[in-house]
Image (cartoon, rainbow, N blue to C red; front, side, top):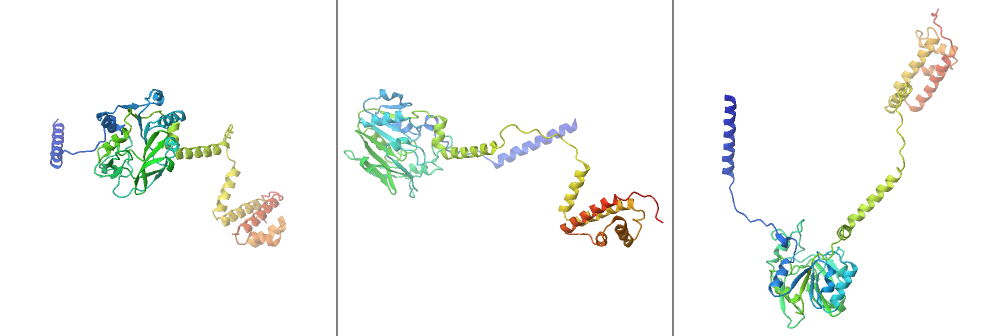
Length: 406
């Protein structure tokens, strides 16, 4: 009981000392941490633009499907960002025909390398470039789709950037200071280009004539985005291009047609799919040779003594012990001869050689070879093995005699 109480007191003292040490070493402090946009702004990068236009008196709507196209008014503006899914061919034709009838499409083209049939239909070509120093670089989005961190991403300099002056080609030809992204340039057939905003390395914004309507293509919706619309004159510029005609509402096209998983993979992971297809084809080709029923495993069989002896001999042969093999072979052959010829084992070497010549029929040089140096080369060992085998066969022709030599 006393031991338990003492242990509890010690643990309590250690816990109190740990708390006092922690309070002495650490303190509470307030700090600001960027957590990104919250709510709808986290998934909708143009939410601020929608609210700005609505506060300025525009009729703002959000399109979630192109099935509403037949009910669209005769005049209006559609804003389509790069996060849209690929439009079906029929829906894309309807959209372009609606623009040709006298309406406006404000388009953010997709980054170079991604499939963008709408930009291709308009003849817009995209190219990655290295942005000049001091200009907004390509925005880096968080893995969950959150906007870039203004404290960690080059896009965070947008609010501090002064932008550059650009003049719209419409009366009264207003000039705005706009912050544009410089990591991608656009080109289009000259006959369709009405105006462009050119940076140090090429066009960043293109104004295209399409029938009676107009397409304003951005390399990136930085001026209209949640993190860019509040800088320079981006808000006033966005309102100006959206209300160019002043004859209809503004529609923001968000995920008009949800693509299948296959469409998404083709748009974002085509090289990975191609590599996977090649690997699967190689695996099938390798596995094809094993197609069909498998052969049954052979029944377990006990090895013969001869198999073990042969395996031991092969091992000694490969390990360089050929002289040892030759010595054991001579001993086995001479033991067989000794059982057939009385007194062979006790006789001196000269008498043994004479017995081999006289009683077994060996030639004198063969008998001398068996009492010479052990062979070391493979050829010499094989020749001696043949001689010993013949000696063993000859010994069997002599009957076994148990009489002592006289």
